[in-house]
Amino acid sequence: MSTLSRDEVARVAGLARIDLTPEELDRLAGELDVIVESVARVSEIATPDVPATSHPLPLTNVFRADVPEAPVDRDLVLASAPASIDGKFAVPQILGEDA
Amino acid sequence: MSTLVDYDDAVDRYDTVIGIEVHVELGTRTKMFDGAEVTFGAEPNTQVTPVSLGLPGALPAVNATAVEYAIRIGLALNCSIAENCRFARKNYFYPDVPKNFQTSQYDEPIAYEGWVDVELDDGSIFRVEIERAHMEEDAGKNTHIGGSDGRIHGAEYSLVDYNRAGIPLVEIVTKPITGAGSRAPEVARAYVQTLRDIFRALGVSEARMERGNVRADVNVSIRPTPESVLGTRTETKNVNSFRSVERAVRYEVSRQAGVLDDGIAIIQETRHWHEDTGTTASGRVKSDAEDYRYFPEPDLVPIAPDRAWIEEIRAGLPEMPAARRRRLQAEWEYADAEMRDVVNAGAVELIETTIAAGASPAAARKWWMGELARTAKQQDVELEALPVTPTQIGQLQKLVDDGAINDKLARQVLEGVLAGEGDPADVVAARGLGVVSDDGPLLDAIDGALAAQPDIAEKIRSGNLGPVGAIIGAVMKATRGQADAGRVRELLLERIGS
Image (cartoon, rainbow over the protein chains, first blue to last red):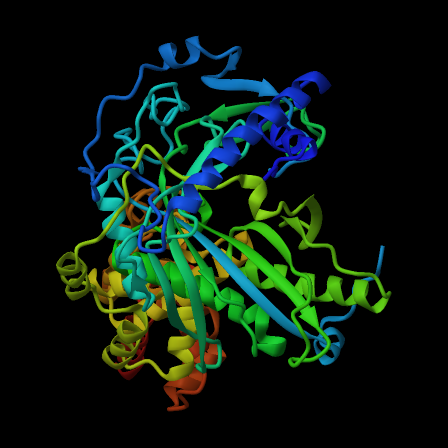
């Protein structure tokens, strides 16, 4: 059951901002297909009495109290910025998106 | 481009359906998933931790108070609270989202299926059905530099401040609101106003529109008749004042009617609201939900609110604003129309606090709905944004009640307070505005006025009290308004009687 087309891989790569060469697309379409097929086989085994599980840990309600902790020093924060101006990260112009 | 259709004409021929998404920033001390403290107006990038910066390896932890606030909101909006819900990653690339995803809720919101009754300007009630309320985090703040108007197009670069990144948000989504007809813009505005009042009553947010604590996205579609299938909708983003919400719906109805009249299909898209022109402009074409590639957040375990905890929160909910308004109206003895004006002006809390500071209900209403409402209108701001506190108005009225100043002087004192000259007592002292209560100077002024207008003085002496106003007026003028008119009248009558 082949499910993943080369076009779909190209689209997902585009959404993830990963630039792939045509050769890489060919190769990945095949490799990802193996993963999708493997997951599909698990779905076949799972019977309706097995609930869908998004988290493997048997835990809920892990909370943190609303208590402040020390922030990271700004000089340190901005030290990892490619560029900064007036205490802010400076990034290339953003066009064609929301304000 | 199609022309706008006159609004009345548009609603005669089309039925409007709206949907509103409201984001409210919760007033917790720290962020949704990390302990960075949140205070308004802090220096850029000083309220960040590795989590709010999205640094590799940083792990989120859910703020318990934010969850409690979200449940409070859900209960106040008559929602069911999920037995079990989880967070999800909404993936997209934008500099204000440092992780390249927003932690949100997708298929399992914490609250769902509720309703809220909204009071319209004429006092009628319109019920808005709530689809869901879910928890998420705010993004950082971008400033675009180099563009002609500071907005995004033509910007040469952008500056990012991550202080806001990670502040807890609750997003409340309505079901399609039908049946409002030509009043859809008013319903939209009243709905956002109602939510703002509820957030404040619940104590979950300062809910200040001008600070962006509450932000609305407005979906609008039109169709030939209420029986037709829903039209294609547009979503106007970040409409951040009550008036703009109303205007944005109105504008979109007119615009879409023009497009449909020309036989063109409406494009499903995001639009930007331009406050200055009162228009919307095309943004990007709306992404399919799958483009965000939502998936369950693996770093956070599900939330299963304990039923006893929910009931405890429910029991602790405060009086809701609508019930409170009815109670206050009775206490203050305002007529229906008076109370409605007060509510529409957003003055309920202001007047309540003013009364608590010692003013009578009538006096408090007079200030906020009179002089201050005019000033706010002139400056095009909400009443609460004026640089005067209810306590100061209470102090001002007390000075009037004590006879230290009269109404005319009080207006000058208010001017001083609004100009940042301090509390009313400071302004009175600094400007020398106290009422002349010493009878000596008043009698001098009365004698002067009588001497200056002998014919009027004669009439009054002969028992014709008609023209006393002219003399009182002259005395007020001579004392530059600083006399107590009542006392002047008393003294004048005594003078003539003697």
